Length: 198
Ligand code: IDP
Ligand code: MG
Image: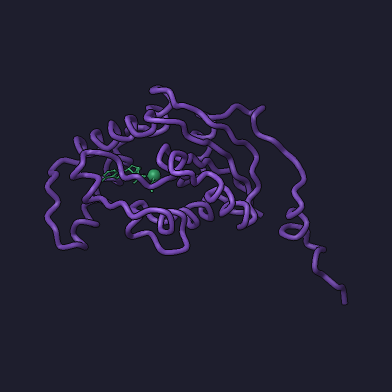
């Protein structure tokens, strides 16, 4: 088994648009266990720590945006990944501080990639139907950049086990994380469930 905990933030657009319930129900429906949840008006330092400005992160953000423009046959007018990454980070700080967010920790087998799958691609307009971003929004890289703001894509979800550990530590303490028996524990994880014997 590979039980994982992952961090999800419902960003200010998701809260203000009234999609908190829709979003949580997607995760519950898939069998994930909610182990911590709270509504917060984020502080500058928390968002600053959450989106750590590493070279890897800046390059990732830059390359994803650039390849999206290329797919659309459009020129990517930003020559420098460092300044692009810095601008995106500043936009995210403004976005996340603009209103309350809902932070939660979800637990389950391979929860980190599972949640990313349910959330969908970064750009809502390219996110597949059936994903949260694909079903509840239509924002694009182009529009966000034209308006000098972050892509409004409703959710943040941890990408790797290292990211999940750091990010959970930013928004929650060890005592905030609950441990309890969920009715699905048996159906999903008990090897003897649904087993008639020989
Ligand atoms: P992710 O949230 O799908 O992991 P990342 O590439 O890690 O996506 O970017 C973090 C967040 O920054 C995105 O969710 C989005 O809100 C915003 N963002 C990323 N790239 C751009 C961009 O090129 N323009 C505007 N906002 C962006
Ligand atoms: Mg990311």
